[in-house]
Amino acid sequence: MKSKSYAACVLAGTFAFTGAARAEPAQGLALAQKQNCMSCHSVTRQFMGPSLHDVAAKYASRSDAVHYLTHKILEGSAGVWGPVPMPANTQLTADEATSLASWILTLK
Image 1 (cartoon, rainbow, N blue to C red):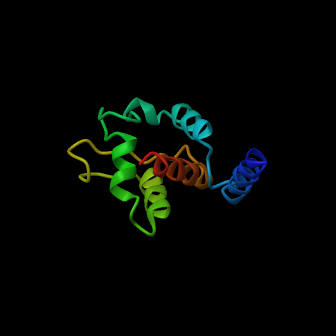
Image 2 (spheres, rainbow, N blue to C red):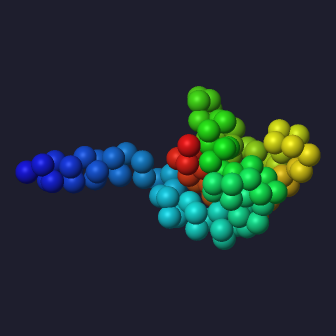
């Protein structure tokens, strides 16, 4: 009986977080790899840019974290994490950038 209750909770949680703006963990990583985010970022260690884990930890407490990171992903950023600027990611759609931002915030 417990396994059925657990399955129902997992299913309910899955439905609560579905949609274009939410990326499942594997989908988030796949999108980051496809869009070359991993050329400068790593999930767990600093590379050219900060680790995505560090990004999540820094911004997770912001009430507008998804919106803020979506904007930074699309428009680029300079001077926040050091001297290397992050270029604008003009190849991404707004939905893809939002999915990436949502996924990154799960990494905290």
